[in-house]
Length: 92
Image (cartoon, rainbow, N blue to C red):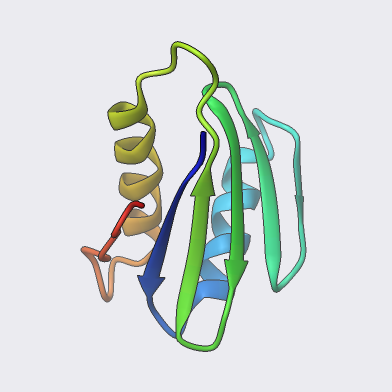
């Protein structure tokens, strides 16, 4: 199962790089200016930056608290996006 949110922002590239750098001290990450993957303990986080949105996909592991997973990702991205927070996450 995976859930994806299309987050409206023109700063998606900046936010995905900041989040990957932030978590690279604890988890394996792989990223560039357009996409990133974080090996998060609850499951992988995949991000892709477009001109008007940041696509965030979480892939919760079996037994993970999905609502908590969404909350942790959202809170961290909002911290980096403080100028335009709170960001809108339409998880599907």
